[in-house]
Each structure stands twice: as C-alpha cells, then as structure tokens.
Length: 462
Ligand SMILES: Cc1ncc(COP(=O)(O)O)c(C=O)c1O
Ligand SMILES: N[C@@H](CCOP(=O)(O)O)C(=O)O
Image (cartoon, helix red, strand yellow):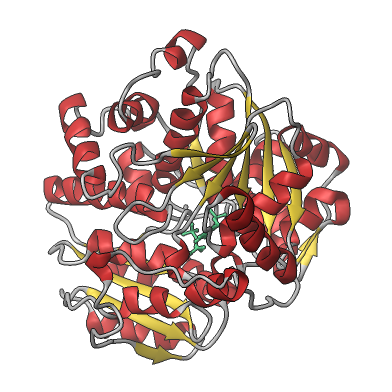
C-alpha cells in the first residue's frame, strides 16, 4: 500500500513512513493511492466481533507490511485497553431510527482517543524498531491536544509540543494538557486562535531545515493514521444496525473534517452509507461551502462548542482531492487561493461533494436548546458538539434510514455550557476528580513561528 500527496508533488510513502512524516513535503496531505474495498461478505463477517477484531480487519489492508498480523493485533489490544466501556464505541437509541454513537469512553473523554491511543502504540513500536526519536508538534482547539499528551507522555523516543489558543479552550481541556508532570510534555498557550496554531504547525513542517533538525512528526489529522483509526467505528456501528444488508447515515459534528472524512473512506471501502452530514457550529465555513457559497475564511467566533471553532478545515483538502478527480495541481491551486482568503469550488466538484455530503449548522441558542431537549426527550446529557450534531441530524435525516449521530465528547469536558442549558452539572469520572487540584505547567507564547521554533529547540531532549 502506497500513500500519495493531495498536491501530487511529494514522494510516495509506505504506511509507516506516511505516519512518521505527517505533512507531505509539498504541503499536501497523504491519502492511500487506492482505497481497499471490503465485500458485502467481509462486512457481514464483522457482525458479532469485538471492537478490536473489527479494527484489525478494517485497518489491516492500509497498513501493508509495516507490522505483522500478531504485532498489529497486540498494538490494537493495548490501544483500547484503557477504554471505560467494553463495547469501546457503544450505540444508544435517541429516538426511532436515530442513534448516538458514544465516542467518549477513552482516557481523555473525547473521540480523539480512538486514533491517538492507537498511534501512540504505533509510533512507539516503529520508533523502537528504527532506533529513532521524534519531536511531535500538534495544534489543538482542546481535544486533540489532551488526547495526544495522554498517548505520548512518558515515552523516551518522543517530545510532544501542543499549541492551543490561549483562553479559548474549556478549563477541563486546558487542565488535561497542563497538569501531566512528564518531562516530555510541553503545553504552549498561543496568543491567537486555533487556525493560527494549525497554521504555525504547518509552517514548521514547511520549514525543512527546522523539520529535519528536530525530526518533526505530526499527530493532527494531517496524519493519515489518525483518519484511518476513525474509519473503524463507522463499520462497527453500521454493522450493529444491520449493514451490509441495510443502509445507514451519519451526522458528524465537524471542525477540521477529519472525523467525517473517515466516514467517506468507510463508504469508499464499501460500507453502505447513504448520507454523511456535516454539522457545524456558528463557524460554518463548511456548511456555506457545501451550500454553494464557496470556501471563504471569516473571523473565528468563539462558541460553546470550542473544539469546532475552526475556519480552515485541514482535511477538507482530502475531500477536494477526490472531488477534483485526484488532480493534485487543482488542489495546489485552491490552496494557493486560500492563502488570500478563499476559493470557489467548481460546479463539477461541488456536485461530487454533494453525492456524499449534506450539511447544516447550529447557532449557540439552538445548541443550548438541543442539550435541554435531548435531556428532556431522551434522558441523555450531551456535550455541545454532540448537540450541534443532533440538531442538524434532526433537520436533515430521512426517517426511513437509520441515522447515527457521533457523540464526540463527554459533557463533563464542557460543564458550564451543559449546566447553562440543562441545569445539570456533569461530574468528571472519579479517576479525574482531582483535575482541578493538580498544579498546571504551561508556556504562554506569541503567535510567531520563530519564537515557537526557538522554544522547541530549547526544550527537546537531544
Ligand atoms: C468534541 C469534538 N467534536 C467534534 C470535533 C470535530 O472533529 P473534526 O475536526 O475531525 O471535524 C472536534 C475536534 O476536532 C472535537 O474535539
Ligand atoms: N477539534 C480539534 C482540532 C484539531 O483537530 P485534528 O483532528 O486535526 O487533530 C481539537 O480538539 O484539537
């Protein structure tokens, strides 16, 4: 299995190389050269398997010879051992033909743990075999950072630097990043928004001298392995509702487009998915784009679903690559135009996107009202991101097709908003009950590439 860049001008890499490389050297994102198919029989055979075996069967064709079957099975087993639910990703019924896929039973209470726990194990195995060490940099609007820190803390072969927007993540998210004591963990509070953090991470990858000096690696969803791990729960949930004999749809609270892009890959692999619905908060660039208004950046508006406060949606580049018929030059041109504000999507590409994706958005008031209504009508307390998904699912879904809305974080990560909406204060799980008492350690830093690179140079263990 080879991986190619969405911009068509970077070396083809193996799974392991693509995973350790992160961003392609032409600035693009790696995707598999061909997407492996699973037959209806292969999908039917997943019925009744546990999550780990499903993960093995779904991901195996993408991994090539990077790991033996036994090694890969052991890695998967270790990755999900710390999850607090035997099903890993349980489904709950919200209403007739509307289901919630709970993705917050991992160590940091958000869906990011599914991929991050796995790639922590994959990195450790690959780096040990190669005798190498890397410097991981990541940008976060709250959840990726805590999941990455949890997955990589204490590893000898890795230093991990997480850039988060100062003052724009929830207190629980910030404390999850700033309270680990491990010397290889570095939380950087950047004076800017998430898009600034993500842009600085990409700048570091595009600064080849720095990239090679510190042996940079990335764990944002620019990393293909992040997307791959998230494909699994589309299969596990659809199969438990009757796939391949029955179609299902998914609504996905969306920011950086990584999670929903994993759904697109599942569909391309042969999973019978009817619609993939993009649900955004008031930062609705993706909804506007899919509604035919072009992809034009605005000012990021802080919201009660802060993890989705994103304007430049990194993985949308991968969707565009397929919508433009895998034309790397066309994608390169669009990304150039994005630097000066945005671009219009061609009619053909828009039609291609709409074959798979619907979209909708939720305002702040609608998000709060949905949290309250979901508690009242279904006895489920949901986080604001999940509420965005439920609101959009209710507006767009076909009642005849089962709709699975992804529940992306535990409500206790966003207690103020949840309590404001519902009057209920969601408690943290007992294992985290001292989170508010632990000392914090962070560095406040300017939104400045040179300052961030200097800080990293000065803090890595060489
Ligand atoms: C809780 C939560 N929901 C939804 C999202 C959106 O996911 P994606 O960026 O993959 O679209 C994020 C962050 O990415 C998140 O942390
Ligand atoms: N919402 C994310 C933003 C970064 O997303 P990623 O999936 O590209 O790593 C977060 O919580 O940090």
